[in-house]
Image (cartoon, rainbow, N blue to C red; front, side, top):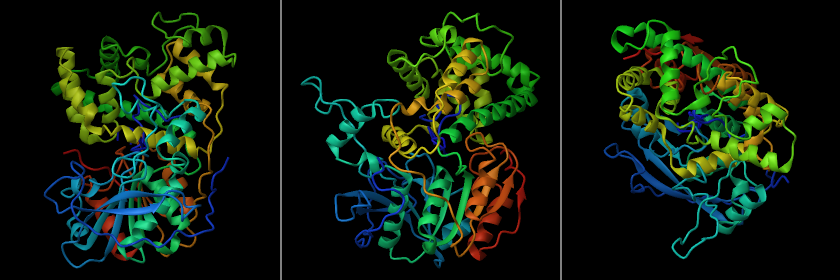
Length: 536
């Protein structure tokens, strides 16, 4: 998901309410030298705790160039997981769950019971752990140890910091590695894995950020693609700032759907008979838990002069006097934005975090409604809310890779003038999502981190079979516009799915699952519309 973009920030993404996107060319998009031949993959045991046991998952370690502009230079290692077909094999399908920054190794094992049996029977299911994550030469950016009690020092924040300081810290562990954490490098890694598997073509399944990764792979290596399924699509014209800004609008829309559903079941949850009543209870609970301005989802009639007493600096200063662009004020803004984007203490209250996860898919709605009802009866009872919030948690390396990719290749210029607008919205009690959208568009989250490369142009004209795209109409993490935009760019066939589930395949939607399997078998797309999955 988009780390979000598809889990804790899994595009995986970003959490819709808690986190938004982290807002010199070393090699460019054209690599003139080919990497050296990749040796074959020797599969065996997987790293401890990396995959679900009992499903026949095996793993291999593949060596790939760290920098594809220097194929004979330093190398890194990636872990690859595989579940072999149980019957006659039709091909190999590689999956990526999103992020950027989501672990991939357990993708197939965790979903084996929810995916069509035909897929499990006839395809070797492979997942490649993306570079920079644990089990894939993790990106380490440690500060020097301050005391003799700390041998490794602390990991620096990759979002919104001083780019020179960040690069120095990262280069101390592996010089040059930070600049190679990009979608293009990750796509080239996929082709190294394809070669190591000994197959001429691969099929691909990508969700959330994984759709963009797959589209980049298809643009770079069209002759290596058999079938491609892109589920919950990144808009290739929005990489990355606008993609994450648009999440805020979509997130509010999906919250309205959630509140309406809870109201429809008021007899069970007793949180209100209308969506507005549920919303009012939600706001009250968030405020009681310390969520502050994060509870503002719709703008009440208020004046900019009516600054809330709890409004943090420098919000109050900028709301009163405007953004002056001084070094001191810019530093304060970066610190505050980083706090908000990473889920700072004022934002990370249990109900806000659980609500973010509930917007991913309706599967969470009954559990979330019950947890909110329990907290409504007993404000101290937040155990289930915390469990829901933790359902999409990721390893810390995921946050570092998320920041590295989205800042290294962001193709949308920041607009600093929107900072004042965002803070004025917050100060006046306006919609928190509108404010966060403006903060994302300001580009502040990446600080002075300038991109090291440009996004790869998406083009599917040389593909043998056009890709199949799935897009939910009210998806909160990858907005609907991403589906048609990606379909146009890559020449794919789009199936619009009603509802707002982030990730439509493998959710018990028989029509969608059958359409995907028909496509994998024949290359044909037989429908262009499907209802949402039933809520079981």
